[in-house]
Length: 116
Image (cartoon, rainbow, N blue to C red; front, side, top):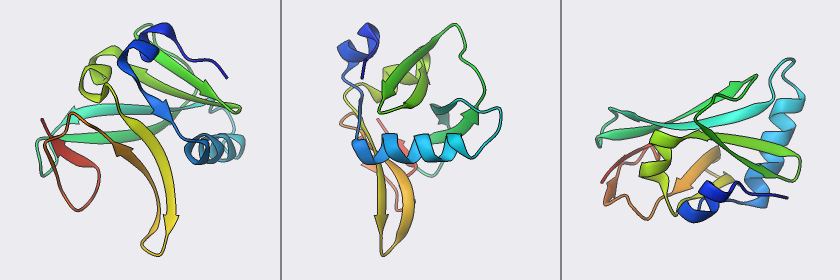
């Protein structure tokens, strides 16, 4: 259970539930090895999170490895996500990855869009 030094400085955390779900999803997807989380411009609040299954790591990726799961975040997205917690929630509203981002000053109901 290691964390990249740059990630530790930015304080990105992955819950056990999120790590477990990533590991299960990747195990069922041939050729995929990690979940990439990135921040893009757009969405109803200015920025949005994007989740992709990928087969490799880019040079600028920071890797978070936990409980057999790998989550990749590029350095640019890391700027917007410092101090965040990546979680997986399974409740009456459905199943989804959620990011609790202390940098976000507003978010919308979809849970994937935010503003800084």
